[in-house]
Length: 231
Image (cartoon, rainbow, N blue to C red; front, side, top):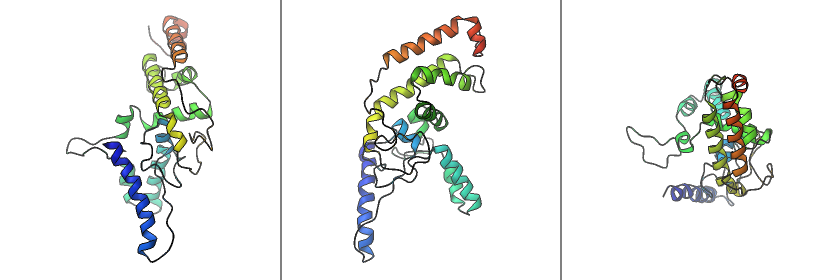
């Protein structure tokens, strides 16, 4: 039902794009602009052929964190105060009923924060990391010696969850709306990212290599010290 609702948004958008010129006595139609950001596309957090399907997506290569920063800046410097409320609100797909004690939120649905997604995107696209190399890169950023102080198992689980979702949803990139490119980690497959769009979801070799490396870190006192681990 949520997918039907999401796709109806696309149908209604195109209907209005055709009716608007007609209502004003003009010929032709309007282009439909998309609203999905680069992080949602990377994670595949959208329905194929839903409101993300459009003629052009001006924010399709902009990260969620940058969008919120721009809205906050616009609220102060351009006088659009309502944008601060939008920036402060928890991101939601608004596909489930909102009650007094429940609001559907993107980050809970995705199982990761937008800040984490931006980090995944940079490592995956810019540094061409697979599961093992991403795990190694995130240890000093998120691991025991970092400000987040996650243990190695937690870091590995986050990497595993991202790559599983990435593999499951990668096929959606074949229908991604063309966008203005403002990030080097845009997942737009035909115009910006030429990786395959079908992956083996289990990532057997990569996940086993990651677990092996994690076990080596946990079993070696010297390596534990290098990563900030504890006995």
